[in-house]
Amino acid sequence: MAGDNLANTQKLKDAIARSNRIVVLTGAGISVPSGIPDFRSATGLYATPFGSYRPEEMISHEFYVLHRREFYEFYKQKMLYPDAKPNQAHVFLAKLEQQGKLFAVITQNIDGLHQAAGSKRVYELHGSVHRNYCERCRKFYDLDYIIKSDGVPKCSCGGSIKPDVVLYGEGLDTDILMASINALRQADLFIVIGTSLAVYPAAGLVDYYGGKTKVVINKSSTPYDAYADIVINDDCAKVLDLD
Image (cartoon, rainbow, N blue to C red):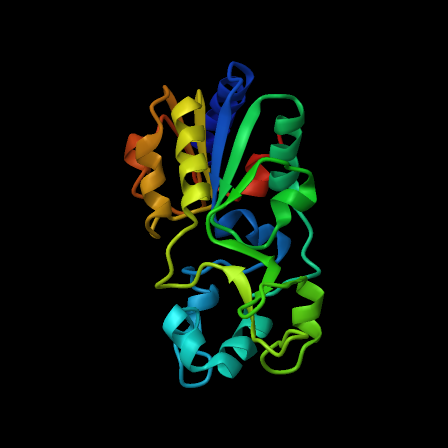
């Protein structure tokens, strides 16, 4: 396996070298080396119940509406990592964009680490913990305000503040989804990084890529592996240490 990964890493380098419109789809696995847990692994977010509730239940729209205090207890303890820093994978992608080779990052993550690394064109399918809005007047609040709030964060107008993240049961932003699809249709190299491709509609985006070369970098296998030209089952930060 190590030998296969080494050979495929060289193939990845060659594919990047001959491409000028790369699009990347990232998931939780790209942020694991930064200290942010993924969702479905043995040590992931879903592995341990939070009190009497399942984590999957607690990050649903219905739970947020019915149990806001409990939602925020879970959200603050398990989903906010303000001290996390971009790792080599985030930095490498930002450098590719600066070189004019990477056209867009499409991410399922809400941590903002791509932007922290320097990436400019990032389509956040599931929103961001760094954006929070009053449900009554739409006033904006940053992550620091949420962290320092007690219980359910409140706006100066008295309204409840909701994170601009997509909870289970909520639809994706149509503009961001269409921008992601358009980017994929124009791409000459598609790289999937750190996602099991188990969550739809994000996982369905792979069908919009019509280019020649498809790459998957993920610790475990994905449903897309059989269709990919290059598959590397390894730590993405290690794989993308290509300088």
